[in-house]
Image (cartoon, rainbow, N blue to C red):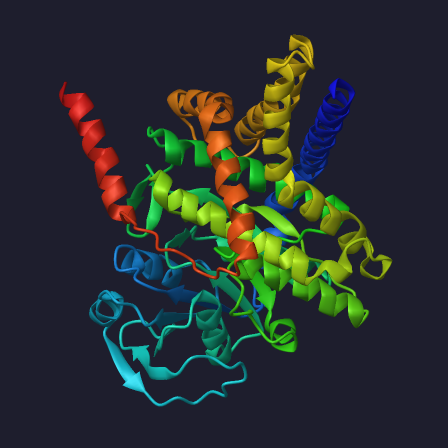
Length: 479
């Protein structure tokens, strides 16, 4: 029994060592990527090219369901982006609140005939509206069908060859589209491109823009800032060098419309439509031997509101992991299949045996280590080594993500913000990590049950968050 416990615990230890070492590899690979992307962004000739007519026209797709708290600020920000030719298609997905009324009032909407082909099947469209004040805006009102169904409806109505999917609770920085199209101007065969998503909670928002980036004082949204930095700044950036990224954030990603139509658009049965779409895109392009790239660019930034309660966050993380399980199972034929190149031989194994199975292995490690230590089957030094590898290695990577942010983009200029980020990176391992493991573990049960529910997210709204921060600053000055 002692040997079995020791060997099993050792295997779990090696698993976590290998998984975290792969994350460390992504971190190392992200450093030259940041340097290269920064060099391109600052090149004077390239900047002039980005201001020319060479820029491809873009359609911004905005699915909206019960977004009354943020819809006006978000759409206003999108309509004033620094880009020559683009349109914004907002889809009201049968909202139960006054999202559509907010849009009508804010943008002076009037109904127009439907003049486009419905290539992708969707729920019934009730009406199509144009704006008298904003000629770039088109609003579609349809029966509820979910986010994927709304995106398909927006693709049907889009006029341009590139489409960018943006959540209605997202604020895009003014020059983000210019930066996001950079890869398309380099003569590369780009199928899709992703940008960075940052946490808007606690920031001061004015006129639909993040005027002052701040790290939230509350722990739950604050620790998510660290998570987002880790995921985007070196996680997805490192995959550029490996050539096999499977994730473009559903809150901020651009695609060639012809490829989306070729694969049938977004899959409405998926609860993580962004991951499922990118995997199907890889599969289609590889099968048809089409040369392509799906890069990530770190400097185009969109800001989003993250959950501030454990109840809402648990639903989100459970859904994300449930969708990952479903996607890996549905596309298991790509796993370790040389036909799909690095995607099949590197990315799919990592997301299957690493990301997907990590919570199962971690919980098993906790149980075996605890039982083994309690019955003197393993010694204290081995138990501490397990905790160090499982928690300490991850904590170190989080700290490095904060350091990488500080030496590269420095969006948080205050010393207090930096200290909070470092504190959250350390405290993340004690309590928060275990909660996320439990939420992800529950996803296996719900995936087995065939659950497809999304769960609702209650939003405070951007302006209210900004006002709250401003009021707190005023109060401190008064004291």
